[in-house]
Amino acid sequence: MKLTKRSLYIIAIVVVTIAIDQLSKIWVRATIQPHTDTQIGERISLIGDKFIMMNIENSGAFLGMGSNLSPTLRIILLLILPVIVLGFVLRHILKDSTIDNWSLFAFSSIIGGGIANVFDRIVYGSVTDFFFIDLGGVFRTGIFNMADMFVTTGMIILIFVSFGKKKKNEHTKEVS
Image 1 (cartoon, one colour):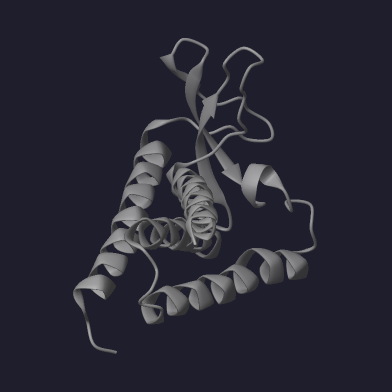
Image 2 (cartoon, one colour):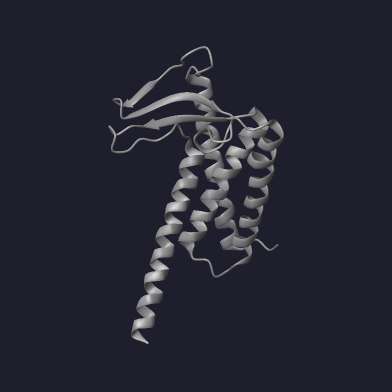
Protein backbone atom coordinates (compact mmCIF):
# COMPACT_ATOMS: atom_id res chain seq x y z
CA MET A 1 0.00 0.00 0.00
CA LYS A 2 1.30 3.41 -0.95
CA LEU A 3 1.32 5.94 1.90
CA THR A 4 -0.71 8.88 0.68
CA LYS A 5 -1.53 12.09 2.51
CA ARG A 6 -4.99 10.62 3.15
CA SER A 7 -3.68 7.33 4.62
CA LEU A 8 -1.18 9.25 6.78
CA TYR A 9 -4.10 11.35 8.08
CA ILE A 10 -6.00 8.16 9.01
CA ILE A 11 -2.96 6.58 10.68
CA ALA A 12 -2.16 9.80 12.57
CA ILE A 13 -5.69 10.04 14.00
CA VAL A 14 -5.63 6.36 15.05
CA VAL A 15 -2.19 6.67 16.67
CA VAL A 16 -2.97 9.95 18.47
CA THR A 17 -6.27 8.51 19.74
CA ILE A 18 -4.51 5.41 21.11
CA ALA A 19 -1.73 7.51 22.65
CA ILE A 20 -4.10 9.91 24.43
CA ASP A 21 -6.13 7.01 25.78
CA GLN A 22 -3.17 4.94 26.94
CA LEU A 23 -1.37 7.89 28.54
CA SER A 24 -4.54 8.84 30.44
CA LYS A 25 -4.95 5.25 31.69
CA ILE A 26 -1.28 5.05 32.75
CA TRP A 27 -1.75 8.26 34.72
CA VAL A 28 -4.99 7.04 36.35
CA ARG A 29 -3.48 3.65 37.31
CA ALA A 30 -0.45 5.41 38.81
CA THR A 31 -2.23 8.16 40.75
CA ILE A 32 -5.80 7.14 41.67
CA GLN A 33 -6.44 4.37 44.21
CA PRO A 34 -8.61 1.77 42.42
CA HIS A 35 -12.03 0.49 43.42
CA THR A 36 -11.97 -3.25 44.15
CA ASP A 37 -14.53 -5.83 45.22
CA THR A 38 -13.53 -5.26 48.84
CA GLN A 39 -12.42 -1.63 48.90
CA ILE A 40 -13.93 1.65 47.75
CA GLY A 41 -11.24 3.54 45.89
CA GLU A 42 -10.49 7.19 45.58
CA ARG A 43 -12.99 9.63 44.02
CA ILE A 44 -11.61 12.91 42.70
CA SER A 45 -14.07 15.73 42.15
CA LEU A 46 -13.32 17.66 38.98
CA ILE A 47 -16.52 19.73 39.02
CA GLY A 48 -18.36 19.16 42.31
CA ASP A 49 -20.42 15.97 42.19
CA LYS A 50 -21.13 16.59 38.50
CA PHE A 51 -17.83 15.36 37.02
CA ILE A 52 -15.79 12.80 38.97
CA MET A 53 -12.67 10.74 38.34
CA MET A 54 -12.11 7.29 39.83
CA ASN A 55 -10.25 4.12 38.89
CA ILE A 56 -12.44 1.14 37.96
CA GLU A 57 -11.25 -1.98 36.13
CA ASN A 58 -14.01 -3.07 33.74
CA SER A 59 -13.80 -6.71 32.64
CA GLY A 60 -16.75 -6.28 30.28
CA ALA A 61 -17.48 -3.98 27.38
CA PHE A 62 -19.19 -0.58 27.35
CA LEU A 63 -20.71 0.12 30.79
CA GLY A 64 -19.62 -3.31 32.01
CA MET A 65 -21.86 -5.23 29.59
CA GLY A 66 -20.57 -8.75 29.07
CA SER A 67 -18.55 -8.93 32.30
CA ASN A 68 -20.57 -11.99 33.37
CA LEU A 69 -19.92 -13.93 30.16
CA SER A 70 -17.94 -17.15 30.22
CA PRO A 71 -14.20 -16.68 29.50
CA THR A 72 -14.58 -18.23 26.03
CA LEU A 73 -17.49 -15.96 25.04
CA ARG A 74 -15.66 -12.95 26.48
CA ILE A 75 -12.60 -13.73 24.28
CA ILE A 76 -14.79 -14.13 21.20
CA LEU A 77 -17.08 -11.12 21.77
CA LEU A 78 -14.66 -8.67 23.43
CA LEU A 79 -11.38 -9.50 21.66
CA ILE A 80 -11.67 -11.51 18.44
CA LEU A 81 -14.85 -9.96 17.02
CA PRO A 82 -13.80 -6.33 17.71
CA VAL A 83 -10.37 -6.93 16.12
CA ILE A 84 -12.02 -8.37 13.00
CA VAL A 85 -14.54 -5.51 12.75
CA LEU A 86 -11.89 -2.83 13.38
CA GLY A 87 -9.68 -4.43 10.73
CA PHE A 88 -12.47 -4.42 8.14
CA VAL A 89 -13.40 -0.80 8.91
CA LEU A 90 -9.74 0.29 8.65
CA ARG A 91 -9.34 -1.57 5.35
CA HIS A 92 -12.54 0.05 4.05
CA ILE A 93 -11.57 3.63 4.90
CA LEU A 94 -8.05 3.16 3.52
CA LYS A 95 -9.43 1.86 0.19
CA ASP A 96 -12.56 4.00 -0.32
CA SER A 97 -11.34 7.37 -1.55
CA THR A 98 -14.88 8.80 -1.67
CA ILE A 99 -15.19 9.07 2.13
CA ASP A 100 -15.22 12.72 3.27
CA ASN A 101 -12.73 14.09 5.83
CA TRP A 102 -15.24 14.30 8.70
CA SER A 103 -16.18 10.64 8.20
CA LEU A 104 -12.49 9.68 7.95
CA PHE A 105 -11.84 11.47 11.24
CA ALA A 106 -14.87 9.76 12.83
CA PHE A 107 -13.97 6.27 11.62
CA SER A 108 -10.32 6.77 12.61
CA SER A 109 -11.37 7.89 16.11
CA ILE A 110 -13.60 4.84 16.46
CA ILE A 111 -10.80 2.54 15.29
CA GLY A 112 -8.24 4.15 17.62
CA GLY A 113 -10.59 3.96 20.62
CA GLY A 114 -11.48 0.37 19.82
CA ILE A 115 -7.84 -0.67 19.46
CA ALA A 116 -6.94 1.07 22.74
CA ASN A 117 -9.62 -0.81 24.70
CA VAL A 118 -8.80 -4.15 23.02
CA PHE A 119 -5.14 -3.55 23.92
CA ASP A 120 -6.16 -3.12 27.59
CA ARG A 121 -8.17 -6.34 27.53
CA ILE A 122 -5.21 -8.25 26.08
CA VAL A 123 -2.53 -6.75 28.34
CA TYR A 124 -4.45 -6.20 31.61
CA GLY A 125 -7.48 -8.49 31.27
CA SER A 126 -9.75 -5.47 31.77
CA VAL A 127 -10.23 -1.88 30.66
CA THR A 128 -9.45 1.03 32.98
CA ASP A 129 -12.45 3.39 33.21
CA PHE A 130 -12.27 6.63 35.18
CA PHE A 131 -14.70 9.41 34.20
CA PHE A 132 -18.25 9.76 35.57
CA ILE A 133 -20.72 12.56 34.77
CA ASP A 134 -23.96 13.17 36.72
CA LEU A 135 -25.96 16.26 35.83
CA GLY A 136 -28.62 15.65 38.48
CA GLY A 137 -31.00 13.34 36.67
CA VAL A 138 -30.88 15.26 33.38
CA PHE A 139 -27.86 13.32 32.15
CA ARG A 140 -25.87 10.59 33.83
CA THR A 141 -23.19 8.37 32.34
CA GLY A 142 -21.65 5.10 33.31
CA ILE A 143 -17.94 5.16 34.10
CA PHE A 144 -15.93 5.59 30.90
CA ASN A 145 -12.48 6.42 29.53
CA MET A 146 -10.89 8.44 26.73
CA ALA A 147 -11.22 5.56 24.22
CA ASP A 148 -14.96 5.45 24.92
CA MET A 149 -15.10 9.22 24.34
CA PHE A 150 -13.34 8.85 20.98
CA VAL A 151 -15.67 6.03 19.89
CA THR A 152 -18.77 7.96 20.99
CA THR A 153 -17.58 11.20 19.37
CA GLY A 154 -16.85 9.31 16.15
CA MET A 155 -20.34 7.81 16.15
CA ILE A 156 -21.95 11.22 16.76
CA ILE A 157 -19.94 12.76 13.90
CA LEU A 158 -21.01 9.92 11.57
CA ILE A 159 -24.66 10.52 12.49
CA PHE A 160 -24.37 14.25 11.75
CA VAL A 161 -22.53 13.59 8.46
CA SER A 162 -25.17 11.04 7.50
CA PHE A 163 -28.02 13.50 8.20
CA GLY A 164 -26.14 16.18 6.27
CA LYS A 165 -25.78 13.91 3.24
CA LYS A 166 -29.44 12.87 3.45
CA LYS A 167 -30.56 16.49 3.60
CA LYS A 168 -28.28 17.39 0.68
CA ASN A 169 -29.66 14.49 -1.39
CA GLU A 170 -33.25 15.52 -0.62
CA HIS A 171 -32.47 19.11 -1.66
CA THR A 172 -30.80 17.89 -4.88
CA LYS A 173 -33.91 15.81 -5.75
CA GLU A 174 -36.20 18.80 -5.14
CA VAL A 175 -34.13 21.02 -7.43
CA SER A 176 -34.01 18.41 -10.23
